[in-house]
Length: 323
Picture 1: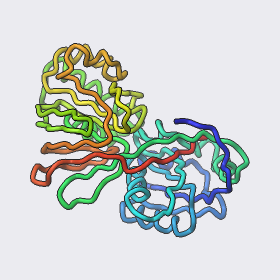
Picture 2 (picture 1 turned 30 degrees about the vertical axis):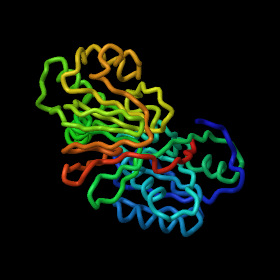
Picture 3 (picture 1 turned 60 degrees about the vertical axis):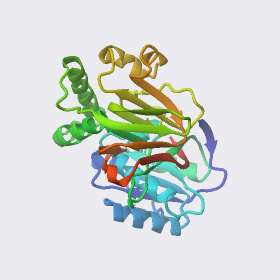
Picture 4 (picture 1 turned 180 degrees about the vertical axis):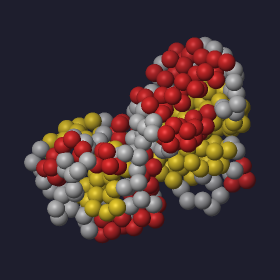
């Protein structure tokens, strides 16, 4: 949902910035944080935790986050999975990372070109802005590991593609959507030639609260609460009224190469002929049993069968300011 609104009451602005994010210097520009606004550099998980706690203690209810998807993912967890705030703050994202998928969908603030004044004016109730609401995933990785918050979950070929993008492409300066585009072309080539070296199948058992079930070799599995993913893809065509959209493509799916244009657009025709090969639904909870790596907003994790299933649900719903 998108609405245009002014701040009904003055907002207390606070800033967290990751100076080590992929495009910090380029996107941050030469604009110093506004005078009188608390701004904290936080480059590690521990520093982000401390920064969120400090800003919550100062009464911040409009939190600007300058960083990439990983920084935003960590902040989301601090807001929704811990008790720093009595009420979740509004978020304003300044995309200074390598991919910035969350900011591209939920909304962003262009500090580099326009400085901080537009956001300060909105916080003071002096102008309008767009507010977008998005649900946030809660991922329980199993065992005694702590829950994770995020906007995107991926396993199988998606995990391998993100790993390739970060290790081989971002490291040589290919940032933004160039890296994901090249990784996608690599995936297309592998599908067309049948080269499975980089995209080994994952044995996946899945069940949800809508009685959907599968147990098979999966090429990839993705789940998200975002409306658009990287490259503006929307590979979901489920019709259920639920917050988490997810898609699984079975390993060896029939005519995969020719269905990819339908899949990335979220066309229901993608799985109409072979619904067993192409599953896409919306759910409120999911349980996944598999062994291997997965990603949450570009951050890497692993699932172990001994730890039990990975559980996906909704951690909460947040509003994002876009100017």
